[in-house]
Length: 355
Ligand code: NCD
Image (tube, rainbow, N blue to C red; front, side, top):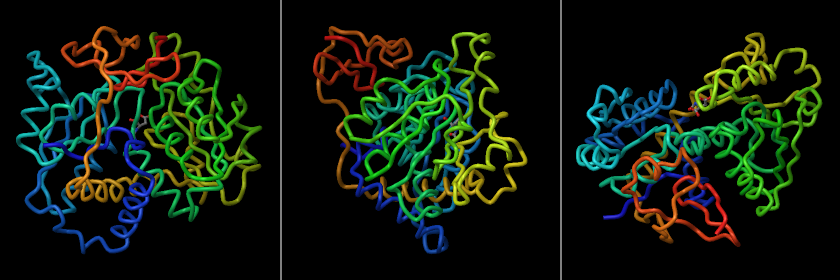
């Protein structure tokens, strides 16, 4: 049987996102109406990487919908430590649960899981690739705080290379009219080429810049991010990048009065604690919205009739050139690529290589 999954938000239609966002806001207004919406249903949370908000907000969401939860947050306590492969774990757990949320350090892992699961799979973050449920959380927050998801100048600042929340958010916001992006980062941590190509092909204007102070007056939304220490090849490379961007009250002085400051959290040093008191700081509200976004998503996927198409083309002779792609670790997975001009695009991790 095929299920509707959430691997990449852009696998679903924008009208579907809008339905999920309005359902989240409806639930937020009148939560008690939904207190039995998932009665007798079980959510499994499989977290192969650390998490506070994503994991607990998924669990909270299911409990508030009247459902129940199982799972692990440290794969070393599961049979993974005995050498079980990803898809065997998924086959088994999807026989116990009605829906799975999985976070994994390898890119494309959620898609690999969905290929073998006997229930819907939600990508709760796959390496430095995507994080669609954080994006739903961000969209719910922007809709409720700015009243619209279009006509926004959005600054994204920090680790734009490894920040999966950034990749998912840009892909989503470029589907709404009249948004533009200012991409604030060092050269080393600039946005991947495939995201630039995405913005270009969706006619979404963007500019790359180094200085947060220079960009801030123009912004309607400022999305701060943590430097993703765990994804650097060496500690030294990380040290060169940390503390380059710190949002403080002085920088906010020249910002718009209705600027909306978001951060997927956790914060390290990139937002000064004094900013928390500023009414423009929305990141704690954003984390609360994550529960409503995930409640709406769980209801939607458990009631879905359509199915997500997972792989379209196959080319088993070629290996993905991304060393962090799941297909280079779980080598039994069927390789699959889309052709884009003279490029082959891996359907698990979006890595591109020449044909
Ligand atoms: C983010 C993540 O895991 O990608 N956190 C989250 O899910 N809210 C951001 C981060 O870890 O920096």
